Each structure stands twice: as structure tokens, then as C-alpha cells.
Length: 362
Image 1 (cartoon, one colour):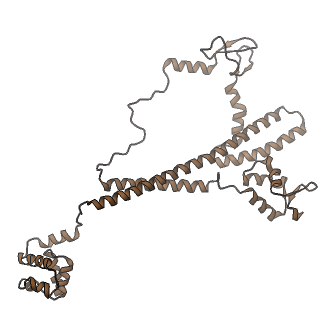
Image 2: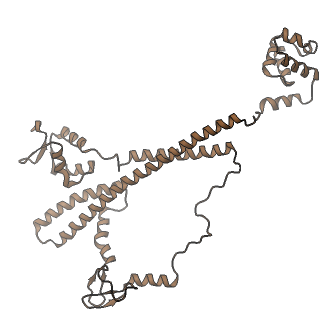
Image 3: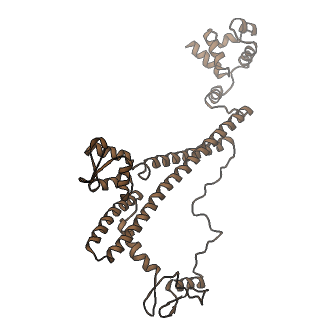
């Protein structure tokens, strides 16, 4: 206990821990320190001359008031080191690395968004072409009078419907693909074409403009020469004349909340802001990249060669009537290119059975 008490007493008087521990281990007491001089501390106890001077000065000053509280405040509370030039240079180097990493994360986020949009656009364009083909086939089916031709058109409609359903499910759209077809086939022509109020003849607005009235949107029927204004043009003119357009107030506050500026512009505050932005951006970039890699638009489809190998391994042959639907849904290829891909894979077609197989297996 004597060593510990001496050690704590020296600490309370302001002596550093190493010197206090060295003196306590030597068995010296506070009373003994008051009786010895500098030469004894340096020769007998191994202290340096400047440290010995400091110890003797502290001991000779005597016990001061509030020594315990002062000791706790010095030992327990961290002392703030002044910012040196070296620390400033280190911070600038770290800040440069953080900014470079932040720029890299933002670039990754941009690339991930572009790839996701590109994949979605490809599927959307393919769905649009399929819808146009279905519209054309349904119009031909309504106008067709022969039963054998209707059967062929229905088979084509079934194949195109599978392709539209696959792309519709990939895009996660609401409703059904037939809703899009009905809108394109039945509702859109009614919105675009105009009926003459005199003879009820359907008119295309691209070729029915009144050449004598180029300033207004008036139409003329070339059958009965009736001039009229469509309802949409009348509505737009009334809105333009009565001032019913949408106006934007330049003094309006932003819709989304604007984050306040930092109260201080020191190194620590800017460093924390950059780290927070980096963490947020990096998490978003990682999320977008993983989502793009796991998306059904890009990686959910099987390659055609893998599908052929898997089907041949399971059945030993490929037949259009049995495997066309599975081929469309799993590979994403069009139904009309089924035979082309079989030939490209080097398969042999048996005209008697209608099956595709490898040359060595026939």
C-alpha cells in the first residue's frame, strides 16, 4: 500500500506517471523527497537533471488546495492538442483520398442507373413492337372471313401473347398486356381521328387541316366540304384566352427541404460531412449495382446455348410444339427465331417426327 499511496500522492502533485512509478518502486516517500537534493535523485534513482529539478520544485512547493480535483481534471479530461502544420497536411491528404473515393462512388451510382435504364428501355421497346404486332393480328382476325386463316392468326396471337406477357412481367407493369393492346387498338384511334359533323366521315388530322385558316386548328371534310373546329382545339383556345395555364412563382420556396449550411467550416466538420456523404452515396451505389446484377431484366434470362443443353440432357430432343413456350420465357428470344437458333446451334431436324437433336444422337 505504501508504494501505491506514494504513487498517487506524486500524481496528485503533478508529477508524470513514469517518474512517479519509478520513485514509488524505489521505496522513497514524500517526506524523504523533501530531505534529498538533485544529485541524489540523478545518481541514486536514475532521474534526468531537468526531471529532478521539476520533482524537487513540486515537492518543495508543498501541498496545494484542490489537488485531487486538479489531478482528476488533468488525468481524466483529454487535452486538446494545437493543430500543427503536419496534422493539417495529413488531413488534406486524407481529405483528398476521401474526395476521390466519393467521386468513384458517384460514378458507380451513375453507371448502375444507366445500365438499369438501358435494360428497361430494351424490354420496353421489345414490348412495344410485340403490342403493335398483336394489334395488327387482331385487326386482321376481325376482317378475315376464312376459317383456316383465322386458325393461323390465332396461333400467331398465342405466340405473341407469350412474348408480351414475359416482357410485361419483367417491367412489373400494372394490368395485363391485353389492356395495352385494347388501348392501342380501340381507344387511341378514337382519340386521334375526328368525325365530320355533316357526313360522319372519319378524318385524319394530318390531312384534314383547313388551308384557308392556317392560324387556327380548323378542319375541313373533303367529302362534304364542312368546316368545323374540334373540341380539343376549342378547349385549348379557351384556356389560352382566359389565363387558365399553370404558372410558376419564382419566389416560391423549394418543395423538398434544403439542408442548412454547417455552423463551422473547420477540418473536423467538413470531414464529417464528406464521410456522411460518402457513406450515403456508397450504400446507394452498392444497392443499385446489386439490384442491376440481380434484376430479371439483365441476369434473370438463361442463355440460349444453356437452354439447349439443358433441354437435350433432360429429353434428348427439342420439339417446337412442346418447347417453344419454355424457350420464349426462359431465354427472352422471339418465337419466330426458334428454328434459326436451333440451326445455329448445329442441331439436326427430323421432318418425320418434327424434333431437333444432335447429329451424333440421331
